[in-house]
Length: 421
Image: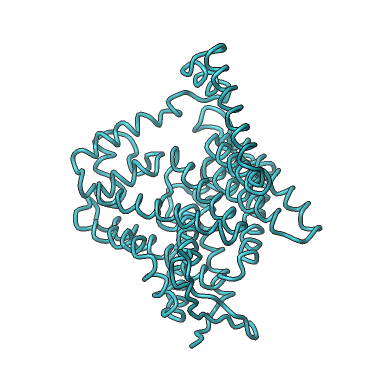
């Protein structure tokens, strides 16, 4: 029996508003001591309505992503031992909303990924252009000159690293759309978007976003071009790279010197601008609640104890370990490892989807070594991570996956048994 997906256009519009609200921060910059307009309440209601119209398909997705759903449920249970129950419940609500809108997006655009990428590309391109405009035209709003020792762009966001993350997502979408698009006229626009994103990253002085964006482009180019080379040429290139690295380490400078010079030349310190102290304190605090963690709240008690903001440790893995304990981090890595294997299976059947999903997956994982976004409510990087996880599940050769047929703008879901190995 075919089941129509309802409210497809409303789904993508709601997703775009959520992603915009996750980035937008001008209201916070202008009125830092005032409460934000509660747009999230309307968005949660809208997501709930769309979910109820498509509940059968969504439950199918949940059944195929038990580990991911388990993490969401675990965040709810953590309210029982969290220091701030209301904060833990709020985080759970945002996390669940992010999962719902991601699931609905996967269902709505299961066979229209390029359409989805275009929607998201234009959203992030326009937000990046808006950030450039605000930073140049209204520098008193779009440039932070007092909190970081030097001027850094924030654009329409509230923090340079938030602006950098926005630009990284645009680069990921752009470089994949560049290869997927058959429209010659569209390609120059994509190039402009990539250049605009790098301008924003450099002006925001976000090293994390610069590195992850560079790796996204390198991976995409590799899979589209160098991956076609035979094994012998790949081995030669690998050995050559290792040989050059060894020579540089041996005859030019030691590893410690090289790291210090690299960071110094980029205006950074080898302790990641003080992040290592946060990581040390995070690991130190973990030992007191090793199994269950402190719960998914704002860690206000730890902030007071260490006199540092502990709810954002600038490392998604340490922060998740601190909040979820061994049980939480085990669930997290189980989901991530499972996704890696599914990505490898996708490569055999759909290379373009594999490249898009893999480059985004690696971007998010790397980004979380110095920032925190993994499974953080309606954070944009978290939404894309869940999108990748759920899409990989549906595309995996080892499950019963839904396919869609289009009839008069109605999208139908029907089971298709895949007999892969």
